[in-house]
Image 1 (tube, rainbow, N blue to C red):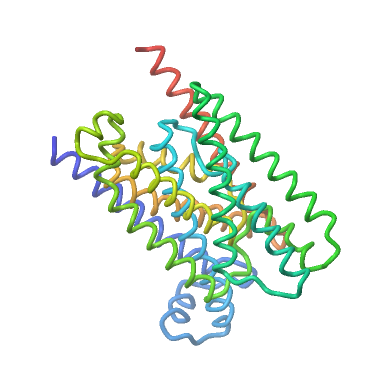
Image 2: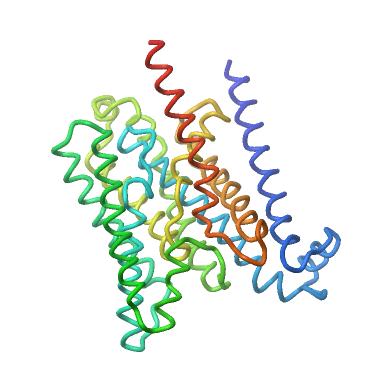
Length: 339
């Protein structure tokens, strides 16, 4: 049985690794300037060729951002699902992404009005504050509500309020730079630079490493708070760590790419189905790879399906993510009825 599980895990990681590599190459090759595989590898290894500037200055920063932020969203969703014990908990559904978007928009508008540019760390900090405000409101509501479904509804309402305020602020802005925030507010990986990729990589990978260190207490927490306490887990501290890490990951995504929907819900369930386990030590790296694969595929579709018009990334992730969530809910309901 153990050998069979290990074989499933190895096959799952192999599938995700191959898909990730294939999509990385396709995202480099396909675009307004199409390239053959030979040209792609020549440019990657020698930095020479007619489209070298396009690949190194535009496509590579964009695809690396999509892979890193997609992985961050998926891991954030898994952490929130573990924290709330709810299969449809995620940064977008709970209104965390929308609250982060509001704070980032207000910060950028306030700084631009004073002629000051906001740096990457400033945007992440603003998004983190917004995430924590939303999470605090959700936790306050959760202490008064016993029903998880009502908690999700409250999160959705918080998200709608934050999105409405953001849209109003952006709509009535006069500065052309502020008006351009509308594209960001819909979600996009475009316009990324290597400096942004560096900041994203440090933030996401450091958070991922800290999350992986929590895999053992997380596994105990999945079996119940009492069990976790009996195993020596400081539940209060652990819950705080879970909230902080999930907020940092989702804040980093919102700060650079805007709110992206359904990745944090759909990917963890797809990974659980592929690996046939919910063990955090497997799920954390698998969700990270799966989120990268999911967002690379969606970004490829977003920028090529109706080229030169580019779709918002959230529109594409919703098209693929919503059926997964519906299938998951139907499957969960069927299992309850069968029990």
